[in-house]
Length: 165
Image: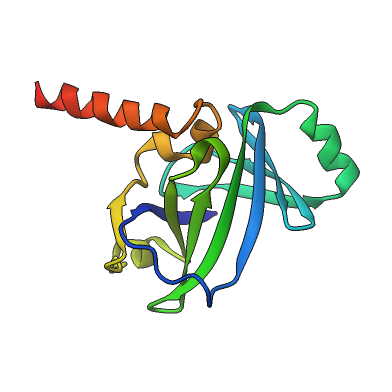
C-alpha cells in the first residue's frame, strides 16, 4: 500500500547536494493503471489501484527485453523527469520531480508516509506550494494523456473561470 501526498513547488531548493535519478515512464494501460519505468539502468512494471492519497501499488523489476517489448504497446505520451531525493523533517523524503520535454516547467513533490496518521499530521515545508493530492489532472497517467504543459495550464484557467461564475 502507498500513502502519498503530492504538491506543486513554490521555491526550488539548491539541488546540487541531493541525489537524483533520471526516469522515463510510459503507460501500457490507463485503466487499470499499468506503467513501465526506466530508472537509470533498471526497469520496472507497476500496477496501481485507483485512488489518490491511499493506493495499492505492486511493482516488479523486469529485464531490458521485457521492457522493450512493453514499449511497443504504450499508450499516450512518454514522461521524462528527473527525481531528486531530499530529506525533510521526521525522517521523511521529498521526491521532487522536474519534468522535461512537453511537460517542461512542471515541478511536483511527493512525500510517502508509513501510515495515515503520519500523512495527516505532516507539516508542509515552506518551499512546497499548493497541495494537488486530490487533483487527478496531476496524476502521471493523466499527464501522459495531455499534449503539453500548456494543456494543463489551460485546464487550470478554465476551472478558475468556471468557479468565478
